[in-house]
Image (cartoon, rainbow, N blue to C red; front, side, top):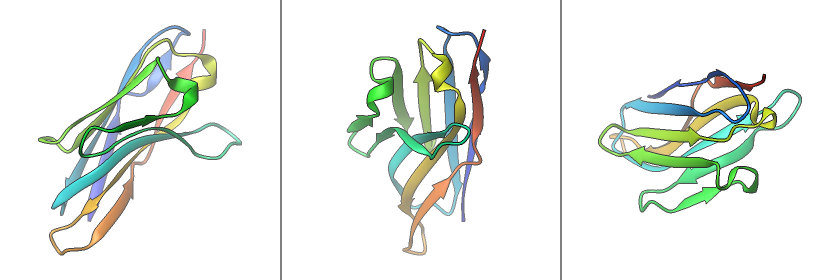
Length: 120
């Protein structure tokens, strides 16, 4: 099994910054793609950003220039630096990790979610 533990959410004023972290642990042989998604109340879960093993990054248009995704392969951790936060960024943020296990199978795991609230 693969477990994801997220941290870093909270309440911040518009224009502020937060940094989310997501650490993967368990029976992991290798990790391929890592990413962040978010779900606002009453809306579907949407892509925020993804990063692959080569460092290729994909950002949602709504956060380009404000958010930055990175990963530390030695720690099986993905980060999301969020700057210039807006009220419309308020959502539950979930990390997503895809990879393979020591048993030779592939996995896709989701974190439990961390709340980000942008409000004055």
